[in-house]
Image (cartoon, rainbow, N blue to C red; front, side, top):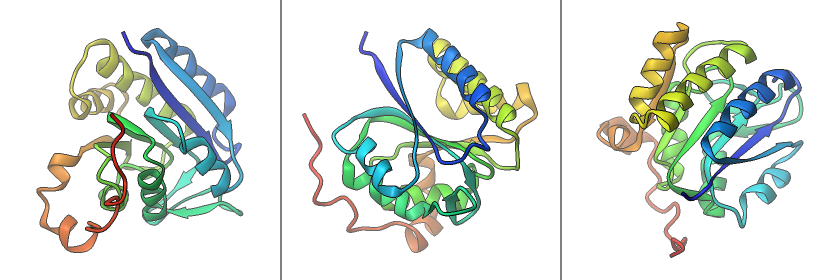
Length: 199
């Protein structure tokens, strides 16, 4: 069985170390290699993405409808993140972007990410303001259903929501592309055309 790769990027200490360590301990049940880094700028993020392939990318920080931020110096729009993921060609097939921040599961966030990168198949996040412990618990339940029970990621998120009362949402690219608003306002036709998938 091929070992999966998970990148956990933290941009603020507001994401509690104990909560993140709890998630990492659970992830080890599923033959997943973990790369966990605290970063301060986009250059450090790019260095982690370029030349690597991931099955999960966790972005841990603060978030709203427009950007991923530490509420101080680090600010990247979701479109910029989507473009960076596309340019670095860092995703394995069927990989999942996990937004470890408030409101990462909002439709506009997902549309911005997917609009800039056709390689993004799934995006998962909370549609409300939640604590670090809440997100750890919800993502743990998600991974249990997806990795252990082999349930579709969209359904796995629904089951995690029912178990925790947290509005966790997982978006499937196929469903997103059926929405005319995605193509009218978010989809970038030129993005990623110069990138060739590795064999």
